[in-house]
Length: 241
Ligand SMILES: Nc1ncnc2c1ncn2[C@@H]1O[C@H](COP(=O)(O)OP(=O)(O)O)[C@@H](O)[C@H]1O
Ligand SMILES: [Mg+2]
Image 1 (tube, rainbow, N blue to C red):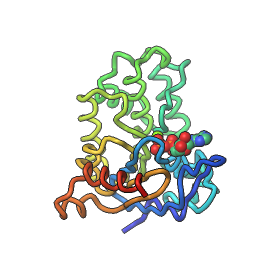
Image 2 (image 1 turned 180 degrees about the vertical axis):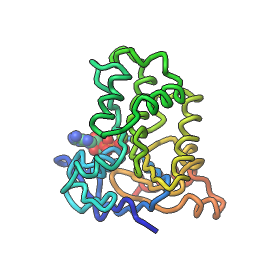
Image 3 (image 1 turned 30 degrees about the horizontal axis):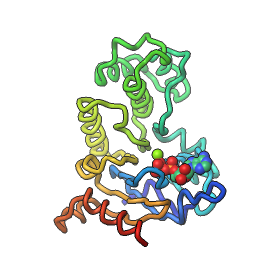
C-alpha cells in the first residue's frame, strides 16, 4: 500500500490556542478519508498544514512524499484544493477563472474539460457571469471544478458539501465515490456524519485539536456501530474528561 498523507506528531498553536495537538494520521492511496469534528476542533487548521497554507508549530506533514512545510508549492502543484470559504476572484467570469487555472496548471484542452464541468454541475448558463455576481452555490461549483479539472492524484476539500442543495450534494457524493475507485485519493473535512459513513473508507475524529480516533469505517460497521452515534459518544465522553 502507498501512503499518500502522513502526519507525524503534528501540532499548531495560535498563541494560547492549541488548534491541533500532536496528531498522527496516515491515509493510503485510493482512500476517501473523512476528517470529522465539531466546530473549532482543528479540521481546517489540519487541512491548511497538509496543503502548506500554514506551518505546523510541531511535527511534520508529508503529502505525496513531499514535506508540506518545506515545499508547499510542490504540494500545491500536485493536488486539488478547496480551502474553507474560499471564493473565486470577483473580477473574472466563471469561464475566465477556469482559463486562469488552466494556464497556471498547464492543463491542455481546457474548453472541452470546462464545458464538461459546466454541464455536469449544471451551471453552463453562468459561464460568462462575473464571479462576484454568482450565488454561493454556483461559486462552490466553480471551486469544485477548479479542484478536480486536472484530475489530481489527491484532492483535499474542506467541507465539500457546504452551500450545495440536496440534488447537488448527491451528485457530488457520487462523483467523489467514483473518483477514488480510479485509484485517486480524497481527503475531506465534514461535520455531516451520515455522509461520511456513506462514502468514506477511513475517518478520523478531532476534538479540541486532539485525535480521538482514526481507522477504517468498515471496522465500525463490522462491530454493528454507526459512525454518527460513535462520534457523538466519543466527543461527549471527551467533553467530560
Ligand atoms: N488564524 C487563526 N488565529 C487564531 N486562532 C485560530 C486561527 N485559525 C483557527 N484558530 C482557532 O483554532 C481552533 C481550530 O479552528 P479550525 O481549524 O478552524 O477548526 P474547524 O475547522 O474544525 O472548525 C479554533 O479554536 C479557532 O478559533
Ligand atoms: Mg473548518
